[in-house]
Each structure stands twice: as C-alpha cells, then as structure tokens.
Image (tube, rainbow, N blue to C red):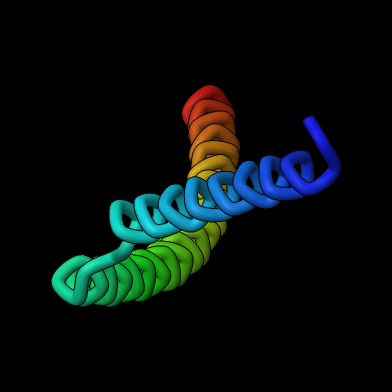
Length: 108
C-alpha cells in the first residue's frame, strides 16, 4: 500500500465515522424531541402542582391558627378549672368549719 492509498483509506474511514456520528445524532434528536402536546401537558401539571402547593400552604396556615386558638381556649379553661377547684376547696373548708361550729353549739 503506497502513501496515496493510505491517505485515501484514512479519509474514507474518517468520512464514514463522520456520517455514522451525524446519523446517530439525528436519530437521538428525532426520538428525544419533546412535542408541543407534551410541553403543554407539562405546563398544566406544573400549574396543578403549584395550585396544590398553594392549597397545602393555606391549609397549614389555617391549622396553625386553629391550633393556636384551641391552645388559648384550653389554657383559659384550665385556668377556670383551677379557680373553680380552689373555690370548691374553700367552700368545703368553710362548710367543715361551719359543721364543727354547729356541733360545738349543739353540745354546749
């Protein structure tokens, strides 16, 4: 094989490699291309996801507000219960003192 034939063979091999690479690139872009319908569907899904996240955030905010209200109401109820229990304790003590006083009066 002389020098000229060697150059032709290398040029032919490089040309075939170029054509195969170009063809592979064309196939990949042809099969991986996203259609307009797919893009619109993805936009609709993104909008639905955004709306769902917004609804979730509103629900979380509502639940936090409701929890704060219920915690406040529970604290008030517990304070009223403590006050009522203290009043009942004082009333029982006073009733016991009155019973002792009445017993002393009846004995004496």
